[in-house]
Image (cartoon, rainbow, N blue to C red; front, side, top):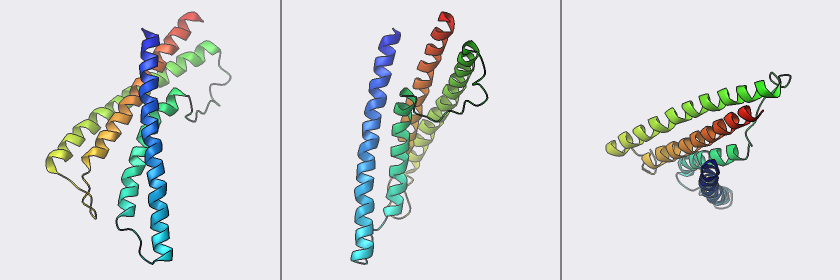
Length: 163
């Protein structure tokens, strides 16, 4: 069962990271076009700042779960480096459970806010881009990271019982 969960979450977070990579590529093209237009033709692209802001949301929240699945987030272990392995596992477990709860709350509230904003048809200032899809990206990325932390919690429990 755990192997199945790991396989599903790893696959989902990987595909989210691919989406984030695609967003990064488009963001690079947009920035290059804006800079080229600004300095060569004295005609910057209208709304680049706005689009960049939304794309950064997508880029970050699409990459969070994959980064956690690869243990790529920065961890400061100066306080726990002297602890026994069993105590470090317990601290990791507490950290993963709390992180999962926080990310679950962020996902839930982001979904709620996304539906509210969709109902009010809130849009950005310059280009009138609907805001709600980006709130759903935040919710999806947060939910995926929440599941990654839950998976890590289960792994911590398994490590704790075997040590």
